[in-house]
Amino acid sequence: MNAPNSGQTLRFLRRGEAVTVPGVAPDRTLLEVLREDLHLSATKEGCGEGDCGACTVVLGEAVDGRLQYKAINSCIRLAHSVDGMAVFTAEDIVSPSGELHPSQEAMVQCHGSQCGFCTPGFVMSLFGMYQNTNGGKNITREQAQVDLSGNLCRCTGYRPILDAAQQMGSLPLPAGCAVDEAATVAALKELKKPADKDTSYLRPRTLATLLQTRAAHPRAQVVAGTTDVGLWVTKMHKRFPQVLDVTAARELRRVETYPHHIAIGAAVTLTDAFAALVKERPQLQTFGQRFAGLPVRNSGTLGGNVANGSPIGDSMPLLIALGASVVLMRWKKTKAGGEIAHRELRLEDLYTGYRTNVMRPDELLCWIKVPRPTGHATERVYKISKRFDDDISAVCLAIQMTVKAGVVQQVSIGAGGVAATPARARQTEAALLGQPWTADTVMAGAAALRAEFQPISDMRASAAYRQTVLGNLLQRFWLESQGLQGINLDSLKTVEALA
Image 1 (tube, helix red, strand yellow):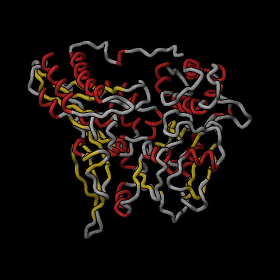
Image 2 (spheres, helix red, strand yellow; image 1 turned 135 degrees about the horizontal axis):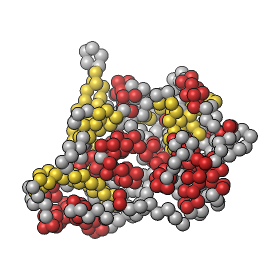
Image 3 (cartoon, one colour; image 1 turned 180 degrees about the vertical axis):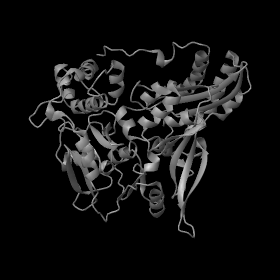
Image 4 (cartoon, helix red, strand yellow; image 1 turned 120 degrees about the vertical axis):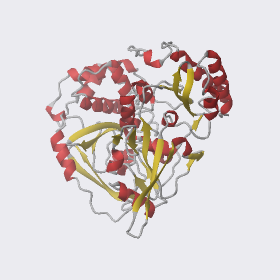
């Protein structure tokens, strides 16, 4: 447990009542606070990296007067990021008299638990699903599998757990288990953050204040959903004396639609960002669902993924292929006091090397601008990983191509997992542009793509495998363009009887 007065006061709702935890250090996780400070031991620590889901809790946040529920990984979520929210754990959804919530009762009736270690995490993912489907109504097998993709079962097998997801909506909801949403929303409005002179965790609520704070504290660790920075804490044991959280800036929590592009704020979660992309590009749905598990997507942000610059970050190859740009902002001092200055550049020009970029110490990545589809181009993105769900890519390749009269008129290709940064395959584009869209052109393009990158070997794949797969994916794109859709993962049906 952290020493008293070593950080700021944290406040959130639990069971409709305000919880106050003083002296929470800026780099403490929500799981640590729940288990060590509040002694809520049902929430487990498994992997400590957001991969197994044993630590899953549900956050409730007031949005437009209603409570929005999101299952998240508490092991990598910094505690102060939930300040002013409602937090639900497995202890909180049981009625005061001990009656089980339908998400728990369904697990009992369907024999969905053995050792019980992972059960609280599954239950909380089920609870989030229950709340977001009007009491578990009409949950399909496919939806259950997607929503539970961030939870790892170690012994029971997934079939009874998927059964529980579909059965919980038919079970009665004990009165003591129901969430009084109106009262919770009202209580959240009254949950005022106490005055605190400690500035170790900074969470400005407007863009202008955020940029001014960044200018004043250029050494603070910038965070969004902390799905990667949380690993630096749990796995690398890094410590941050000061943290700057961008997720409260209301301007950056929006997706804005314009005639020729959409603008995704840096604080928009991956869940909401992919929903906006899929709305205009339905073919991206499977890829969006394979981007980590749901609890990670509910915490992580698209802006954070891009700014992080990991060479295996899945969103960047797609955004590069779609022609996305980023808007960098900073607070510029003027004679009148100051103003927001910004510059825009192509996403692929953001990076200078492994996890390094062109941003100044006082700059923040604030917006991602994605051109809207024109209807002329074919767009595909391919993710190759050892597991289908909740896994990191070995190779990610995204292609946007326009073919007219049998000739490649436009092409852009983004690649991940094959260089020190997410990259644009410019040499391959040059080899394809203006050429007839034929098997010979594809063969030449595949050779160019394999030659353009010199990937490394690591635990996910060998260099030779990555180079081979790059060319194969271009050939797969060609086959799909010729009408062979059976090789596309979107055409596969979910296997219902998983052992």
